[in-house]
Amino acid sequence: MQKVIAGYTVDVTQEGYLVNQSQWNRDIASEIAKELGIEGLTSGHWKVIEFLQKDFAETGKIPTIRRVNKVGNIGTQELYALFPEGPLLKATKIGGLSKPVSCV
Image (tube, rainbow, N blue to C red; front, top):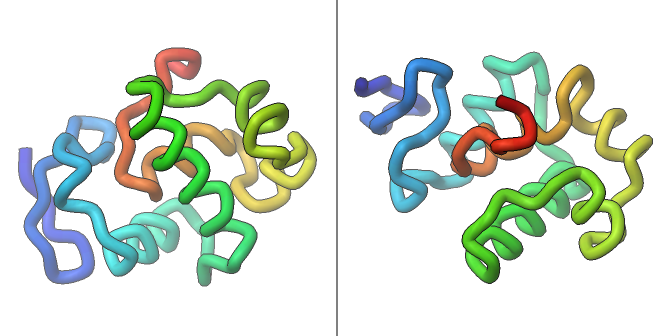
């Protein structure tokens, strides 16, 4: 299905995850964050999002929270502070990635 986010028409799943990562941009990320109750993405948010995107590009898999902790050097408490009530679900959605298998 299609949805207009930040003025861009993008393909999304029923849960609102982008189908095509190439349609993602920072404007879309900011708008999705607002929809999820996160006002204003900080450098901390971007650090997490960029790690998720980079790791996915390298491995072809959405990293687990444990991998974000160990490889990304981003603590669990920091993740929950930045993305309350489901950090991996929110961060992947904002970052234009698919829903994590570990969160199905």
